Length: 283
Length: 292
Image (cartoon, rainbow over all chains, first blue to last red; front, side, top):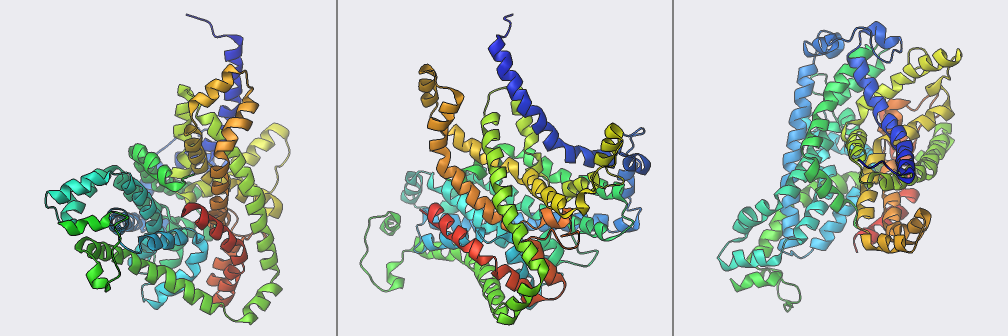
């Protein structure tokens, strides 16, 4: 075995000098969250780096809804799930239709639609939230899941359209031409040629919209208010308002809430990184 | 099926009534745009116009101007944008160079590094919030253990609390920008670096004459886009400090929502309208850059 040269050791040491702080910086809040979830209350509040008696007791309390802050946990989990899936599906439908129309059918005005979408994408989220709140009131949708679903579809669609449009443009026109020669109608072209070829990007965009809705706090907090209608993040935020917040349960619930998106991200990582970074910023 | 060839550019069709000019696929095309256009009209055009209409009274701006919290929020927003964003993008630029190194441990680290971006804001922000609790938090416990002194009252000191909110924002969004800048770095042809290596260029020279010139546009675009998005970042401030202590850490995004919660809708919209001189030029430049 060849010993590494002094220079190689030096390079490695310099890389570690960046790597170790990056590791601590990234993991500390997440580790702290996990630590609280597996600590009995006394250990958590004593600022220990590892609990004396690690336990899954907190998870039991959350799953059995054994605290008055948690009495609607499963309903809220379900609300988050339904809303996220609905946003994923609706965004996918709207954005795929628009991208197919603009990129493959070259519909007149496509350029304008792209620019309008881009404009939405550039409105800071919290700034659109205020008028959106009033708008949902005017439409009679406040405290209704549809308010949050439609708001999130509005926010997810522009980016989805851009990512899908750019992926569509890369598909060779010859495929469309061949399908048309074979007598395919526009809808057949869409269903049998376009959608199958776009599958990787569709997975990326669908996951993106779903995660965006699952993770959303501000719009959920403004648009929904009844305990049985709110989503998990809003419930977590409501813990904060109380003086006697059970922090160990709050963080356990937080960890349970953070796991599905992290798992989904890693499951679809390949698609997401390729699909989303390609469309995000073209230099 | 000759009508299909209309979709190729350069096929100039003389102006006839719209119905005659459109081929079947284009009618389909317009129909497929309808769902998005409906969403856009109902949830972007209508709310934005309605919001601007609500913010039409000069009296709201006078009231806003007399609210000391507004002035503080405006200054905080600028600090967030000018210091926070530039700091974040510089770190992202450095880290993008670090993460493209081919080492198996760096690959593993990059998998973990993405976590802050992949997990929702609220659990991790709450985690940090407790970590810096002056009495019970882990950080002050550690400070006491090593120095025997009490640590600072982190989130109760406006200057520290604002810094913490900026750091929280960086923690959350750094992975995304690092990833984007990595894509930019990986797009640079490798042979340029090899040629420079042969000529004995230092790492700084390689960065200065190869990496930076090809990354400059991307870097600037990312910085501008990050500014726009950061203006709308409500979570980092609201969930970490709640705008406190004494409403001194608000930014325009949390201030707008604060007025809304206080049922002062006109002030809420006015606060947002006051951010337009910041937002509009950024959006204009971004639209020009990206819609080319």
